[in-house]
Image 1 (tube, helix red, strand yellow):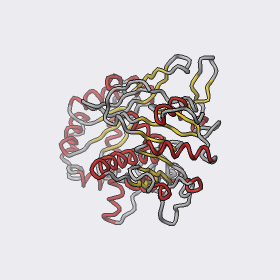
Image 2 (cartoon, rainbow, N blue to C red; image 1 turned 180 degrees about the horizontal axis):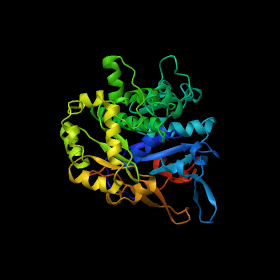
Image 3 (spheres, rainbow, N blue to C red; image 1 turned 90 degrees about the vertical axis):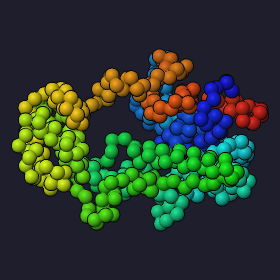
Length: 399
């Protein structure tokens, strides 16, 4: 294995038996922070998401490869090895790799790995220092434990769709697999905590994390509002249940976001918008009163903002210290000068891509001593079999 810079998780070995998005995104995050991540995939098929396109990466021949953009999104900083765990030889090899691993990430259905002798309870005594992270739809306990979990189903069952969408429309899912992504984030945090615990005690442990549990946890203020007063929230479109005016408004030419967070900001907004009478109207002087009179106030604000183009409002409101912003499409996002300055778009060298590189989303962590690094493009299926076996086991006899 080539020499790599010392990073926060340098020396940590992760065996990634997961596929799709939640588990792979957790393992990718660990890889970004320096862990050596080995992705174990099914022979011939590999991770399901490799075929989840278009779009696919264009190869050197000018034709599409078998690697989808979806797959690329969660699999950098990994090496791929194809192993058939249904075979005796495959299981024996996985056991040998587990013996070298600090962390195992898997997202099989509950009981799925038990058929191969790879469930946590079956191996924990053999590998007492192993941190074993199980990502499932519903967790390893409870009446739904045996069900498969998919992001869309979880968004519906976990309540976020009941909060998303316009009042008169149907419940709406978030436009990306956010339940998967957040589960991956929580899984990575749990793994880091477990590594710290092992550092103190020498003990590994099992992490049981589910999409539904995670989805419910990030209902945050909306969930806590319900637990506080018992009232079911209604869909507010782009409105906020606890702050007004805080939503998308029309202007003369394009939509914009107005995000008034306190009474002082509201007064400054009224001054800029020529609505001074509202700042002294007792119906609107405080946020609780503005919430009570939400519909009337937002109609007045919308009418005022329609008189001028968006750029004028953004310029004047920003100068007055009133939070506001555009509603960007993805072209707008990646051409934004601030986004460029922060390095949100990543171009990684990739020797099998037509242009010799691929475009990815950068890790958002900015760390002064141990920042994320981008050492490996997402791997082709079984690309690193010999390399992994030599690095982890000291030989390539299993090939």
